[in-house]
Length: 225
Length: 225
Image (cartoon, rainbow over all chains, first blue to last red; front, side, top):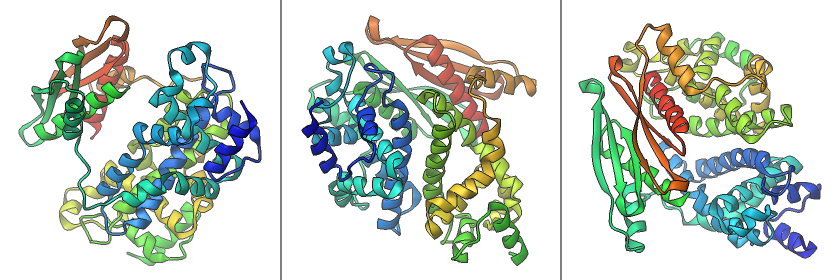
């Protein structure tokens, strides 16, 4: 690792580590070394969840819990975190095992996104919540500013449809697989099939609509893994 | 609300509110009043997640992330939080709408558990992370002390089986519904049926075993809703 890259990274995240070993560990995938970033990621995921929750709580005092939850999910997800990782050029700083490196692990969303969380976990260990709040403000500011609670966040079926259309892949089919439970408390199971990708995903919910959304969400996750 | 109950509650949680309105809001279900506890619960859930994550991270320096995640799930779940709520006698302090009250809402696990989270969120707003950490230490200490990472936390199929046996309900049947994806990256869909309860739950995973566990987990959640 070239020293100047580490310096640049710490400038970009607005935090200079007291203990430089922590940032190195945060950049180490489990394929590379025993001292890897998985435990830091566990911590960082929780720290980030709290910080974004508080930002939304304070910024949107009139929005109900469900809206806050959806806005948080739109900020904290693999795709967004991987974008942030790319803005930080984390791919070229990651320490990966040779197999992972050959298979392009340093460009994979899952690995990139985990690394962002690990860095936040490392800051938390190094000097506590306030320091992570500052970094999160820097990294997420433009995305938080763009949030508009009056805009409905796109539902999963729409997201899935747009994703497939943009890649000229035939649209999914939804099918009710089962309906169970008593009349006043039925549970619907729906299957979402994207045959050209060989994907089948299931969803369940208290209405057909909810179950379809859930199945679409599962399918999206399956595609993006 | 009798004053002495509020005093006792604050003694039990080891925190006296600066702003007494916050604790009253935390005890108010959305069925009772516009100023209810749902947003506080959103915040409290995130605060609790971080605090427990950090306790486990520090207490078990050699445990991998997966183990920490499972241990956290064994501490932070509706059942445990509802037990804590009962230890705090929250049921008799809850402010519920008359419909919820008549239907026994003050004894329902979901409402009790949400209220514990709302109280933790209220402490966080009132004076920050350190104060919540103290309360969580008091409320969870005995449960954290009992954690033993060498004891395998029971997997979902075992939990489901034991749950059903203890209620003399016939055991579930598992059935592979579909196998999709290419040879080296197959996804299994498994259905878990508990016919006497009219429950069908689906699970998916990269092996039949994982999919069965996932289906059992969904079924358990369905039962315990």
